[in-house]
Image (cartoon, rainbow, N blue to C red):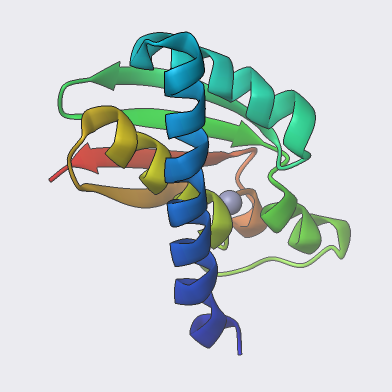
Length: 127
Ligand SMILES: [Zn+2]
């Protein structure tokens, strides 16, 4: 079931977050300000986890999330996944960075707390 649901979850959060980013871009009139505001907003208001942008250049970005809600479903039950599970957040960062860079990006979850890592990390690459 999970593998069939993943693309739907990811596509929904991607499209949704493109709109969220546009909302903040219009409010701040500046995409750099928009992205700076969005990480604290995600961390404090959504309950999705504590998100921080570790680095960014013209080729992509690296993002870390502590206590991502998707991984916590495993951690709380004392279970481990053999692969990263945070598909909703992958979609969130795909939507966010595709809007920011105005280009298609790929998102890979390189570390996931559900597999036993201390946090989740996402590598975003401009295509
Ligand atoms: Zn994860």
